[in-house]
Length: 132
Picture 1 (tube, rainbow, N blue to C red):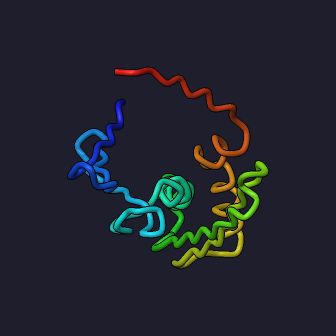
Picture 2 (cartoon, one colour):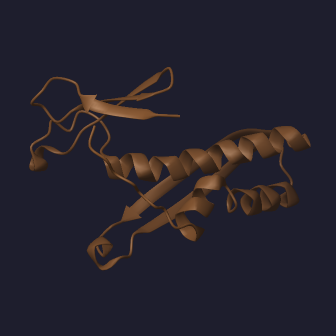
Picture 3 (cartoon, rainbow, N blue to C red):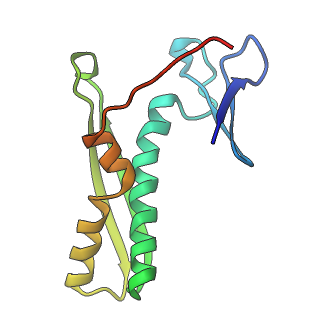
């Protein structure tokens, strides 16, 4: 899969991001010269964790017949130490539906192992950059 990001209207910062047949947008804050018209790269990074956890809970619940009606994941960023190598994401989960305490516990344990959580916490990401 190839993800493509390109300026929507050069020389503006706003990006059109294509992921297969899907289109997203990204921008930077006005403090950085952007229009703050879309999430920034850090927002998209953080959102990948939230959406992965939510989707993992939904897939798990469906496959196990668990009556999960809604999952809400909130991610709060603390990037004050990012330049020192620490980027903290605090995650708050809420599960709704006719769920027992055991169901909620199992869902909580399952989302700890979502692919993006594992990628962010256990993998070395090797970025290879080239000029087109």
